Figure 1 (cartoon, one colour):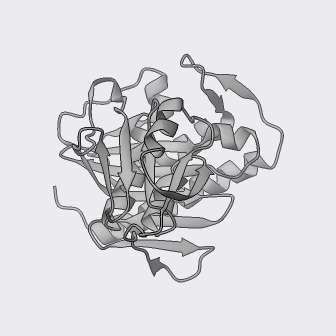
Figure 2: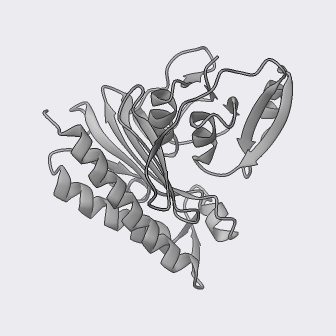
Length: 256
């Protein structure tokens, strides 16, 4: 399938911003919170943002199926056998959204042959956009200013900056972190953890807890484009299009 990747990436960035604007309009008001079958929260911001993204992707690439979190929760799973699909988390970090912490994101990734090849993450509360379309082609843009290239850093010799989940920390995570010389430990929500590695602000993010493919795809695309990597505990690349769409435990790294 021939895609104008540069033009498509620009369009996906615009789509993420549109979804983010809708999220913020709800964030600034009172909103209802519901609980899904897996006990995770969902709000009208999740569903409204997903509707914007789904409509935009259908217009841009009608031939590419979309796996989106809220649609999947409602039992709508597309045929992914063609090897290419969009992966959407319209509001990653709903708990951060509910608690008004600002650490939530819009995630859109393109999956090809089980790997994320394009990724966009928008942080609506901060106006920060991360986007990537392959090795060395990854940028950060703040509040509409000129985009700047970002790169993951080499691990410092005087200790790592480790980032862990704010809402999903586990004893297994702490045990793993204890194996390293740690200079700083940062707690963060949503896919921002992967962005911190991609922009050279952190070195290691271990995740010993449940995640879904849509939680990670865009962040993996961005981190790998910046020179980092995301691997399972046995050192294999994290793959997409799995039955059920659950991820195994994984470790994300900068340039090690």
